[in-house]
Length: 112
Length: 110
Image (tube, rainbow over all chains, first blue to last red; front, side, top):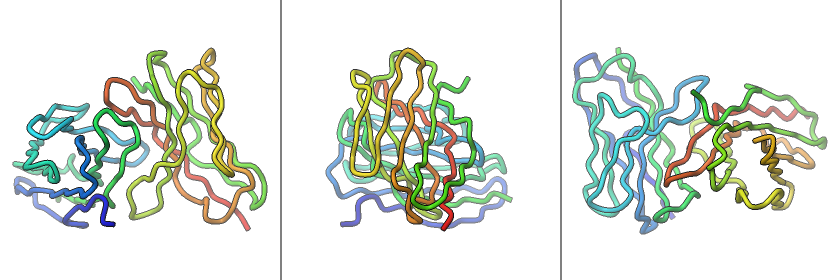
């Protein structure tokens, strides 16, 4: 039972580089989410996809784009990485409108 | 403006004793409250939840209490075990979104 799989687990980028964080879930969940976690702060929602074909901004969407490729996959793209985007990124999924989320193990991103 | 607050960054408890983690919120429209547990290098995992229409929910060693008038909830762990050492996040659910507290690091001392 893989649950939610995120790749890569670690990444170092130079300022201005771009990259895509991948997320896939095998639980047939409708909703998927991208969060970032910074020291001393709770998880902050970047973008979410309530269902296949829809995406919406969360609390901190600036500097990011997302693609809901199909029901299983939800990717997060940084077009021009900045040091302020150094963080741990978590992908999660849930039943439509469900509050119990299943999280991936995270991607630790450092932008230098 | 933090809608969900966990004012204790860390808490140290003796093994076998009760651990009490606290959470305050500001928005009376929240429908559900949840506690998640997080180990290092892992994603958060769901622990226990409570509906806004209840004041207590129990699951084994874990009990969550909700005081709506005070906009306060707490998680009780009895008895505390070494495997309970983790970061605990309180979260509130409304309009298809979870709003998270900053987390409390629980350390269980042997």
